[in-house]
Image 1 (cartoon, one colour):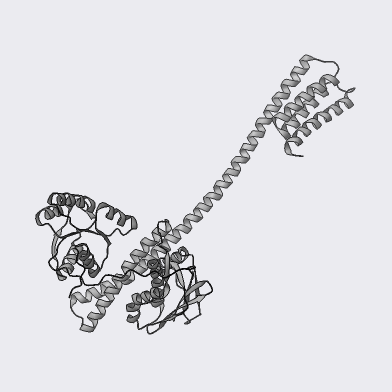
Image 2 (cartoon, one colour):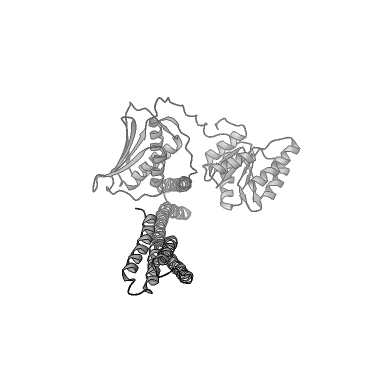
Length: 476
């Protein structure tokens, strides 16, 4: 029997019980009957609420009028009024009790939610602190080497061998810092769901070779041997080649970082059923590293490619193995890579307007491009750049996006207006610290011929300038 029916059954039973008692005590006290029926109404309304109480009231009126001495409208009216009052009071008490219980439950829920929120906040705070600590460590490590060697170079107290070592370290450190910035931005894109992969069937062996070449200088600095073993029966994987190269490079770079001098790092590429396995094993102390930016990127990139990653330690001094498993691309064929342009283009005689408000960046750009044969004009603002374009008509414009009196987009609009009057078109390169895909799209949509993100090596910048100026031949 459900709760509703049970409530009405209690109402009927209470009135029936009162009627039995009234019938049994009727010869003794005629005044007891009304009280018993009111008690039955109270029991019914206490147990079932308003409507069972009203049912008990109606049944009590019928029973009292039938069983007591003689029908009395006055007595019936009093009984009905008191019964209704009892029902209403019981109903309100019942509602107040339910409200209090609901408030108590809500308070308990709020307390649990507050405790959970506090725990989440504490976890997030610890995660943020750990992330910032790792980021600080990974940034300060190359910066320490940079500052140290720059200090010695400024003193001029280094012999030729140490100067070479200093320049190699500075190059590695700046490359490492640039990669850290890229990893940080990529990690942000992944977390916010904005990173998109350009998937196609690719061959893994060339990717592995390029990743090994990218870390060769770091390995040579520690006299670490890098061995590569490739299964000749490998198929193709469905992957984004750039992201896959980044993934393998980060794993190799981590292995080289933890391997002591004169150690060894081995990378093995093999087929396992319908999967390709990439294993990188170092000869380090055998401790599984904390996930820094690079390894966090690896974890996310592997998952985005539908693969798995596992870390195994061989114990003290036994090294650590990173095993990445990627699914094969069924029925795929090799898609040839687009060849890279020949390095060292000629900038001889090209008039290039560089718009940059940072003094160090200006000097670096000017010295680098002049050493490659270009004639460099410098501007530090939109207004100054506009006047230079009107006066000298440069062959190529290289502009930062963020400028003190506007931005590169406003500058390009002015340049295009001048071009329209003169019947010419000035190629424009956006050289900016905004590297996102949407930033590149906005720059190209605004009319820039090319978008380059800082930092950029001089040879790549020179190649871009030569390309937009129509000079593709290499320097002699």
